[in-house]
Each structure stands twice: as C-alpha cells, then as structure tokens.
Length: 296
Picture 1: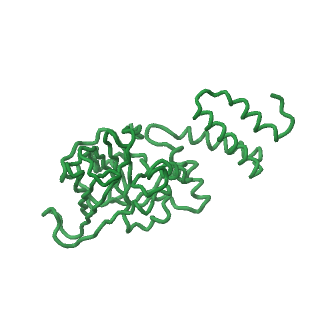
Picture 2 (picture 1 turned 30 degrees about the horizontal axis):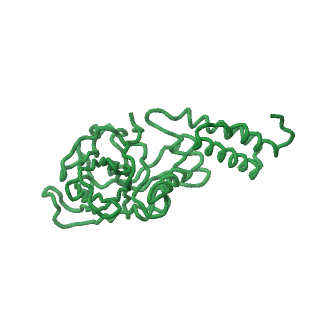
Picture 3 (picture 1 turned 90 degrees about the vertical axis):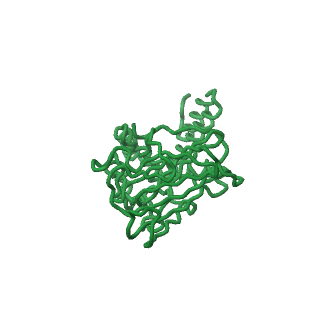
C-alpha cells in the first residue's frame, strides 16, 4: 500500500476497506471516505485547519455526558438531524410528515394520565392550553390504544429538570388513545428557549451571527405495535423564531393551529386568555421501538 501522490490516497483507502462483511457498513464507509476526501480537496484543507477540526470533534465528545449531548446539538445546528428525519419519514422524504426531532429532554416513565387530565404537576403560571389530538394511519383510520408521551417547556422556557421550582415530571404525561384514536389534555402554553452555547456549537452559531433559540413547541412520542414510532414537535405560530430556529426543526406540517381565546374556557378555574390546539398525527407502518432516553 505504497502511496506515490495525493491522488493515490482515496483509491488505496477504498481498496483497504472493500472486505467489510456487512454490506451496509461497507457502503457507508466507502461513501464516507469518498466524500471526506473530496471535501478536503475542495476546500484545500490546511494542516492547521485539520488539527483545529480534530480538536473540535474531540471537544464535542468531551462535553457529552448523561445530561448533555454536544454532538447531537451540533448535528441539529448544521441541519443534519432535520435532514435525516425527513429522509426517513413521510414515505422516505416523498410527502409531508409530522415526524420531527426527539430533542434532549425526553424521559422514560412519564406519569400515566387519563384523557382530559392535566400534566401540570406543580404551580406553573401561564396561559392554559387545551389539546385535542387524534392519531391515524395512512388511510385515515383511527389508531386505538397507542401510547402517547407528551412533554414541553414551561412558559418561562425551562424543562422541569432545569428548574428547581418545578416538580419532578411537571409538564409530562403518558396518554392512551381511545377507540377513535383520540387523546386530550390540559397544560400551559410553552415558550421558546435557548440551546447551550458554551461549546463548539455556540462557536458555530456566533460565527454565523445566528441566535441560539428554539421556537415554542409541544413534544409528542407515539408508540403502537405495527407502526413506526412517531416523534413530533408542534410549534406555536406566534413565535418570532419560527423562520430562524437554531436547530432547523420547523416544517410547514408542524406549525400548529394554536387558537387564542378570551371567553369561557373548558375548565371553570381558567380566567382570561387561554389557548386550544386541535392536532392530527399520521403513523406509518413499521417497527415500533423506543429511542434511548437522552436524560438518564
């Protein structure tokens, strides 16, 4: 494997890995080598730039722990996470989809909650929101007995594990769809929030003169045997960061119809401003499996 000139490097590396037994791994490694080498040639990568790039990758690994994943944060800020999601949902990128990013704050074993119940588990000031949702298959048939995890930030922009003033599992709940595929609950309207900028992702955002905010949204994770697990975020249309989301997560299909009301609410204790959201989710056939929880 003697290399005479720079043009020899790529074919030599490809030849060295041609005996990988797993065909999919062999395909991925070959494509990675081709694109990585082409990138270095296209930008004429210097030795100093290579060293700095290696340091950046190492720092992302060093900053990743049980409660923070800098690698996923960077992937989101480059639009890579959003692209992978859209390529693998909506009939493999062919149609609109309500699939979206998992985010870093999903937790296992959120409290079982009856339909019509509340996921407010400690005093959480803010406008009330009443959500009515339905889960269907691609033919429009309702999906009964699906498990639906719901979680979101407070009106102050904090998830409960970030905020000592919130009870454990505040603004989280697990519902089961009824015979019509419906589930419904009460909460408070979420707010947008900043992503961490104390690492390489923050350096990238500052270099691009970009802010580090995510627009307000509700999270949903829907699980049912026979269907691909649907992970979604439904964004509020009144957030001024919709067009400039730091993680490129907003698609047209995910902007919810959050309606503001000032009149009588579904609950007698709600006075003044409140919101409603009617939302439909479509699940695709596939393997039902849960992701690894980012928060342990």
